[in-house]
Image (cartoon, rainbow, N blue to C red; front, side, top):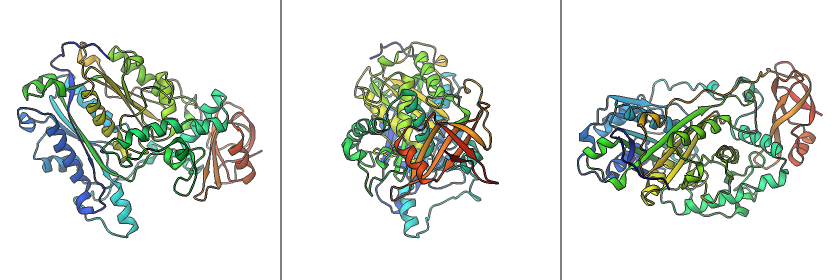
Length: 501
């Protein structure tokens, strides 16, 4: 619990939260903008305000990147749909931290007196997209961007990483996990089994979440057992340990200054205050980061958000940590100084494999659920974390039903703090002796080892990426600790660097 104080009139608080889950695959029912509009209407109604929210004057409307459909101007289209004319319209880029960065930007503006009321929404209809693609059915959705915006994948993954097979991104997360496993000296078997109880606990939370996509409790054994319905795309992650993106979900948040909440008559018990907000960046490409076994960005962002709130981590009552893959949970827990078996649980939503992971928008759901959780537990506090890329950026939002007594402008900053330390030198290829620093073994759909991807240290202390398809090497990496072992690299002309032993 945190102590209550008198709120500054500029103190930013969440006053409305709305969530939508649409299990239909009918495109006419599930067009993304329809889901956004419904979530926004629910968030406005959720305030319990005595006077009209939109009549007060919406200062900003932000829409998180939507991968289901590229609208020509998402925020402008939604504003027209809602019948509002906010002076600030914002569309985000891609990334799981984007809901927080949009919300934090509004919090900055509210704390600084440039805005009083803002609305942020995210949502996807990827389930409908998937079903329509399998049925070869075109989507009859409106206002497409023409031409569709080009994706700058280089902001997330380097050419060297692509050439060596680091995508899908689950391989990158598993690779980072191997570095942490070796750093801690844990056996492959123990490390593979460790996350299952935490994911089982999250699934139990999802079972009670009316907005969860997969509301069913799973046992740790179910999560670990490999079968066609729960294959292992990369060792040691089963599908039930991975984010579930093919969902139809949307969520919206209404944020206001304390003065605006007073003016429109929002009951005090419905206000959830932003006690702190922060984000920090690591280097975007995995091998650039000096310590592959930890996230300095998570450490920095967690220290800043707790410091701004004037709180200790032990003061926090509820958590929702980004759970796309086990390494995301582990690294965030390390940064916070807890384990993934923390008594508080790691998710109020049920986590990304079970609550659902609508593209870049999962954290909007987490913040919406945390808002209601805190309303139900007056005086409580909650911490929500989100990341983007290959663990490149991490953001934290700290919420409480009790306001801070500090100057609101000192509670956070939307911009992500720059990486700590210099980037490692990464060579485009390696030839000769090298040391394995981290690796992941990807499996085919039948469960057989298919590809090994690695970060290697070269004799001059630079790094390079490497790969292998050799059955013997893959078997060794799958059954023994390979981190720290000497290998030999060769690089054919125009090809990836190959691991030999």
